[in-house]
Image 1 (cartoon, rainbow, N blue to C red):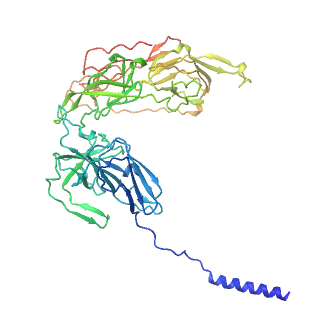
Image 2 (cartoon, one colour):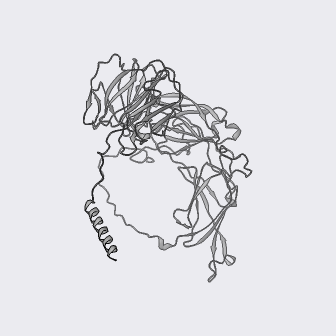
Image 3 (cartoon, rainbow, N blue to C red):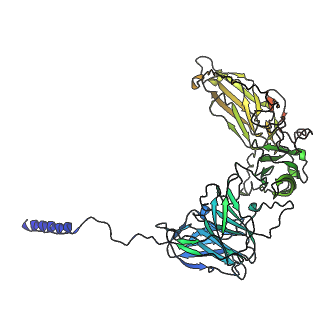
Length: 582
């Protein structure tokens, strides 16, 4: 017993000694890592010549990540398909997807995208350079980009340089900013920039402050500026570069001065943006300014009266062209031309004809299993804007992928379901009463329709749309749709009556200037025309309206789309007739 007491006392003494030695504190270590990662290996080496590969590998002294690739990384010259950046161990693998040009100096600008994995320290303004020729272009040019109105620095503005040898169009308007630049540089946050790896040739220089990040000039959205003459870096006076200790980067004395501005509220040059064909039967036209004048639009092998025009905006600068033709007349590549009026170098609207080559590929069966014996799903798509409880003031909205060619309302059934007292929910005792209804097409969007009826508050309804009621421009037909819903009760709504007192202003004794009473005082308008945008130049009257296509219940199949082709402004030629149903 005495021995056990002795062992216990010795144990307490040992614990007391360790307790006195222990103390709470921060673990020992070095200072926080504030150094950026360093490149230790490049394959091929930086500034390599006669490069013919498709891959670049960069290895660092620590693990890194890529942040903000979309905002920071860019190539000079720009590539149609951006390279892919993949992390491999302590390095980054760059896979080049585009075809490289011969005898061309390329620069991969990483900006501040490369940061270390732990602390996020950026490897600022890192650039990898190579050439597909025997030499690296080595000329430099500096400049300063600022906002033309506020004089603030054009933060992160892209600098695009184009050889002065680019041929001008026949009317003198070259639309340079819509072309791929030969050299791309980028301004810092203070607007200063150095364009590197230039040839000793004349360049036209533009600045683009890209608001939406698509690297493309969008008039009215992006700010842009340019130097009014061509400059050759070999003949320009030299400039000095100093190290900015605050920004921790090189800062040049500018040789050029560019002022960027947004022309949204001022004069906007009329240009046709790249024409797209996102789906088989649709062509998208977008113009840089409102009210474009379109003289002709032609597609080889397609009758112009089978092209249905849809304007997406009141200003008619965004158009959808729907092709109401059979599949056999729609090749993968459509060729044609458009003649429209665009501004020349003197800002005069002159006719310009542009060739078109529109490609579309059917990729719907690309991922389909070859051994799959099930029939493919119905390609007809539409969306019904209705819930289990219908707002009677909204009615039932239907949105289709394609404009409709035919709507057979006689086959559609809408029934009011009423239950005898005490038999609610018993379908066998329900009384179903057919209800009148009608379909109306939206006056702005020909793919949107509404189903209207005299809805009974708090009433129960059943809707049945059989297969084949809707036939769209792709000759596709709908599947059967059955739906049950109720109408919101009156207590879900509040109604207010307003009494407005209008004070009549005192009129001047001077006779008013006569004007057309059919035009609103503050805007111009045009006589009512079809919904198809023909030549959209505003004349004395400048706002078009369109009629509503209506199909009533119990009627026969109705044609829902009008076809038309462009015509000259204020033309007295009537619109073409609607295309016939298939």
